[in-house]
Length: 267
Image 1: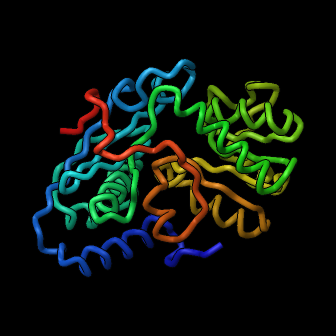
Image 2 (image 1 turned 135 degrees about the horizontal axis):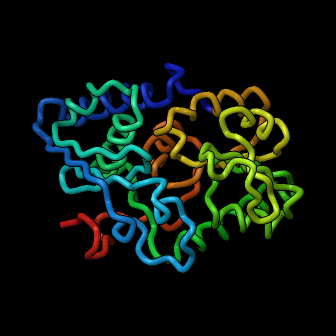
């Protein structure tokens, strides 16, 4: 694992983004950045299962546009934003709203520069296909092991239980509605107090990229390194950060703006 410096992953990403933009001669270009929240249908289409957080209203997907390229980020605190890249890089990363804007813009900027091939969330039944692919990859790379899931994604949770058995799956989440609930035979742990125990007990942890926005990623990353636990980050939110730092990520059905359906904000 390559550690980012400074210790805050998003601050380190901001330093790298500023360097990249400067190298491309874009620091003084008035590149317009627009960010808006998507409806559930725009974001994820019409999946068969209806228990994803974006459908139940607990999260939203925001979409940033930079020079025609688009990037997504999940958040529980969406906001609209219009400004330049310089404005975005000056945002204090002290709130979920600002972190979500920064991450979505980072993804869109890297997509616009050809550093990401896909920076938009998958749709329809792709999330369930993604869950199968993720479980297959964990099994192929590590075998039958204890797997920790940080952030309850119902499709991924169910497929991990199907693949590894409920006794070999640990799940932690921050949503009070989920804590102590039993999902697919697994009791959901409190992500605020039990994440380190989950990491300690797991051979592999699967981490949602949304942790970058809700300000839990840095602590999780330090715990992963402390306990020498294997990891896999999933989802489009973490696309740009993982690319910048060479972190292992899986997001097999992500799209780009050229593949956007008519229901999205793509022109």
